[in-house]
Amino acid sequence: MFKRVGGEGEFTKIITEQNEADYAEQLSNLEENEKGLIIYRRNNNDWFLLTSKRVISVQNDNRFAIAHADIIDVDVAFKEEHENLGSSRLFTRIALTDKEGKRHVIQLEHGLAFSGIIQVLYFINR
Image (cartoon, rainbow, N blue to C red; front, side, top):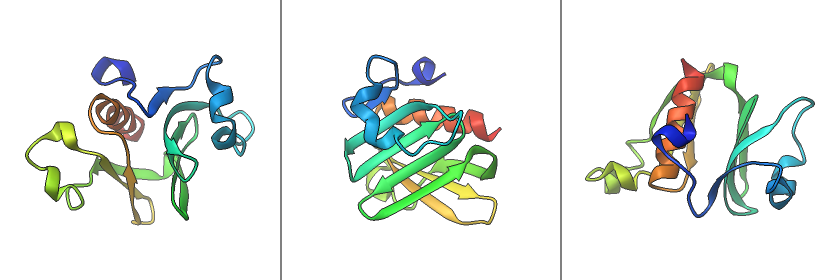
């Protein structure tokens, strides 16, 4: 699904056996039987990881993780995207709402990477 509507970018990659060592720090705290699937990593203080069980995001000192089952809504973070409303290809922020009503905004890479990740999140949320 990720490649059908989007794709990898400079900082966004599908995690494979060939590249998982590059993301050892981000993958080090996964739960038993949890697998990293797609990662966006600008650096070790700015990354997003989609796993088989959760969404994990780190932006500076802000870290959160949400289980797939706890996500009740996925959408473009239109409030934060006001400067990019002229072109959806420039969107970089997704808003996830958890079952407690808390809104989490994730910053990603624009273009095909953004399109692919939001489609996967829409699918998970169905």
